[in-house]
Amino acid sequence: MHFHHFCVIFSFFTPVYSYEDYAQVKGCCTLKGPGFKDIEYIILSRFKKHKMMEYNSTRGNWTGFTVYSIEQAKNFNSDPADPLLRGFEKKILCTDNIPSVQTIDNLTVTPTIKMNSVIPSSSRHPAMVVCSAYNFFPKQIRVSWLRNGQVATSGVSCSEVMSDGNWYYQIHCYLEYTPALSDKIACMVEHFTLSEPVLRVLDPSLPEAEQNKIVVGMCGLILSFVFLSSGFIYYKKKSAAYITVCQGQNSIAVEEFNPIEATTQTIQDG
Image (cartoon, rainbow, N blue to C red; front, top):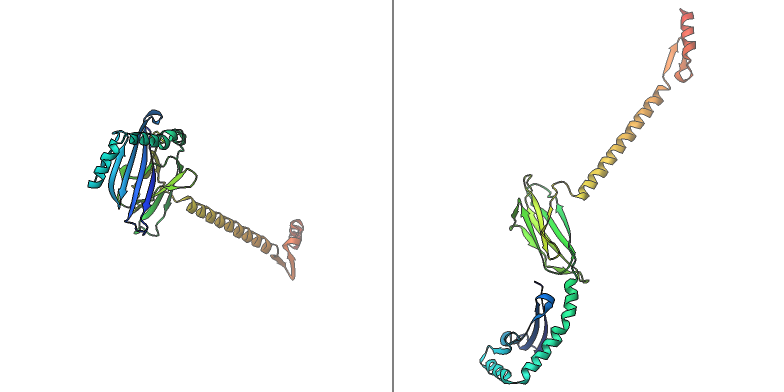
């Protein structure tokens, strides 16, 4: 069942400003049922933080909570013009705003869910996991942590649901825990737009940023090895080009040495 509640508040202060010395009148509309046809209009009057009087359209009368306001409520209830005035207020504040509420109610956006982990500097320090839900509407949402299938209660903290200023909302929930290989950490998100809760399971591998660093480092290491090997091979070839073969007092460079002539000369010398 769809439900909407909105209020209009008027506050009145005494000439000498004081947070304690003020009167406040709040008119609220509660819209329920198909098409929001079930409407309840409530007026609440306060003075110095104390509840004075209340009007409820379901009951159709005023209720007083102090000696003075009880007498005032009796006067309002006996006034034939008061129901007409309350009915006019209900129409202006509640009934006439049903189309706007229906438009807002039809505006639903499924949250985008992201999870990030922070690797601790040592096994003695707890790890931090962050589960974030972005760009969702309506505002009502529930984010909880599961550890090995059980709802985690310790080390859990969540931010308030924050408005993005464009009808959308976001929320961030954190979990501190000591990493263990057997642990299965999951973030569970429940929202009006989801037919069932969505689970995001923590990947025990390194975060993407850390993986990228390792890949870049390995590529650099491989390239260094290739360059080093190429230099070593080039050096060996360069050195071999200047090895000489001695015959008597003559030295012939390998680059200028003809294997066929060398064989013929060796036989003749023999």
